[in-house]
Length: 422
Image (cartoon, rainbow, N blue to C red):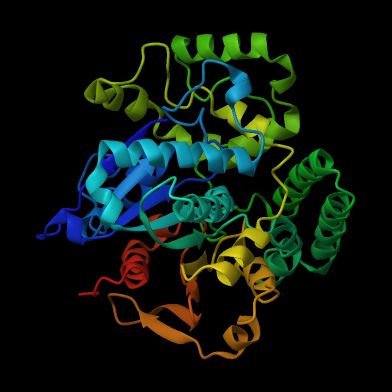
């Protein structure tokens, strides 16, 4: 498992600042690539300095997770996780090794931040890590988990698509009826525990939405998509011969994992598109600078296999893990969502949050929202808190909040980890 640790550049002893662990989505999207260079790391895709880099305030560690993602790799495809539980256990192994390598971080507050499918992984990982800490298997100071535009309740997300698109004038009532019909099929498949069928129907719902909206951008409904999503593609997210060799060898050993058309379609949306811009950087200059990547490993070379392996687990809910965190720990639990995100709309996120089996749910629902100003003085977000749970509504941002609203994302992070916002 490959990780990339940045020590904070704040003018303080780095050990006095929290450690943020960033988990990317997909599944199969690289934290060390996407989260690092496209969202919160010190440099952007052009290797220029990022104004709102989180490293200016906190220590940040990116990990390519699950194994097979980014620079992380497996020699046996059977080791690629097929469910969220296996992902959590692999992350426990990673954290154990990480704290051996940099033991000073054992006494530094740890916050798990996540995005998209990374939030689903983060919720279960936080539960598993808390138990490992209590059993003295891992020594660290877990302080909180933040779930950004997270795939916590897939059914609530999918069922929100029609109403959200209708409310934003991207479809008419006839279009909403068509979408609602298809998303109801998704819900029914999940209720019948037909999880692979549910994933396939989800892909069909996306196709329908693309047709009736003239190609809406699922990441941000007000922006144009930068890449074409097709239902046919090559067998690897990179054109390098090394990656082809790696993927071909895996497919020879595990032919049942060859991507079906609907999984290719979904992969292109949620891993391939956002990874494409990084391919040259990560498989070229960064690979050379790092000097630790094995010769037979290519960044992103196994990521499609990760997506395929988790296809049956894709539509499962992680709400119970969030409830466990709220009911059995004192950890900070945060949900934050971008106003313009369609994949995991705020409408869908609010639905599962407002139905949490937690004694504080009704108190949170009836609490007052607090407006938060952006650097221009305009309202850039709202937040609402009860006890250790907070929800952030981030305005003018889509699925990848730090990319769309960098200053607000950084300000939110500082509030969560307890660093004074200047």
